Image 1 (cartoon, rainbow, N blue to C red):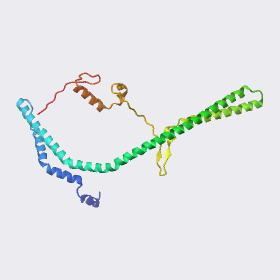
Image 2 (cartoon, rainbow, N blue to C red):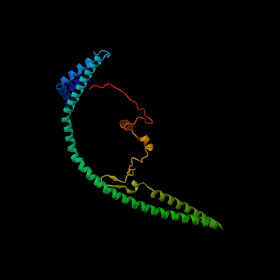
Image 3 (tube, rainbow, N blue to C red):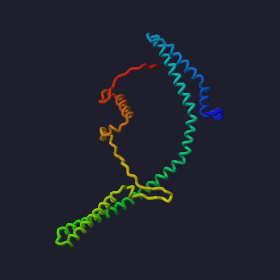
Image 4 (cartoon, rainbow, N blue to C red):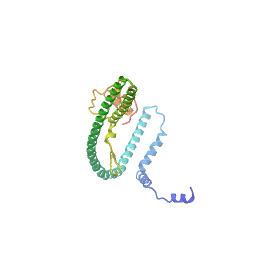
Length: 258
C-alpha cells in the first residue's frame, strides 16, 4: 500500500457499525466492568472441597447468571429499534411484492389451465398420428410378407424387395410418431412471448393425504434430518420412554444454581 492509499484509508470517517459499537460500549460500561470482575474472580476460586466453598461458588455462579440476564435484557432493548426499522423496511417492500405475488399466482393458474389444455390437445393429435402410422406400418408389413410368399419371377422379387423397403420405412415413421406422442409435457405446451418469455408445463411429483399412523417411516429413514430425529428422541424421553433401539438413554446430573 502506498502513502497516498494509506492516507485515503486513514481519513475515512468511522462506519455506522463502528459508531454503534462505540455507543454500546459507552452505554454499557457498567456491565462490561461487571463481566471483567466476575471472570477475574473465577481465577481466585479455590478447589471445591467443603460445603462452605461450594456455597460461595454457588453464590458466584448466581451473580454471573444475573449479569448474563442483565446483559441479555439490554441486548434486547438495544436491538429493538433496529428490529422495528427492519420490520418497517420489510413492510414497505412487502406492500410491493405481496400484491404482485398474488396477481402473478392468479395469472399463473390461468396460464397453467391453458397450457394443460394445449398439451392434452397436442398429445391427442400425436397419438392419432402414431395410431395412423402404426396401422400403415402393419399394412405395409403384411403386404411385404404377402409379396415374399408370392415370389414366382424376377419381377416378383423386385416387387417384394420394394414392399420390404416400404414396410421398413413405414415402421421407422411409426416409431418416430410413437416417440413424438410420448414427448414431455413441457415440449407439448411450450409457448414464447414477444419479449423472450418461454412458458411451458413443469412436471413435478407432489403428495397429499399424509396419514401419520400409516405412513411408512422405514422408507423415509434415509431422508429424516438428524436434528429432527434428536427432537423426536427428546420428546419421547420427556414423555417417559426409557428404552429405544438405536439410541442410548441414560440419566445425567449437572450442577444448577437458583
